[in-house]
Length: 89
Image 1: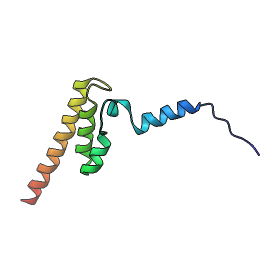
Image 2: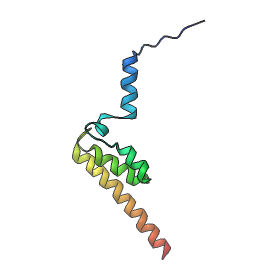
Image 3: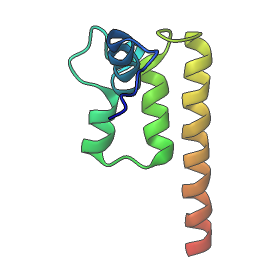
Image 4: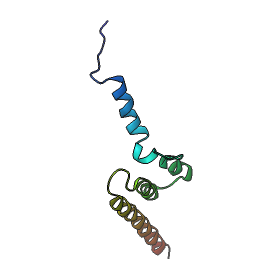
């Protein structure tokens, strides 16, 4: 019987899993993760991304950049709603 060996230590695997499932820039110091709100509120893609960028503003990268990205997603959502409303008329 052959045995496979991993070059990655168990602690590294745990850290990688944690970074994927609960990144610090979203959860550290918080009681609710953004993904929980996104799922509970059943947010569409644009609103989910906006919430994600707002929640991590200044925690992962430049806070202003994160907030500008949130605004970008919100503006795209507004444009889609406006377009749908025009088509209804």
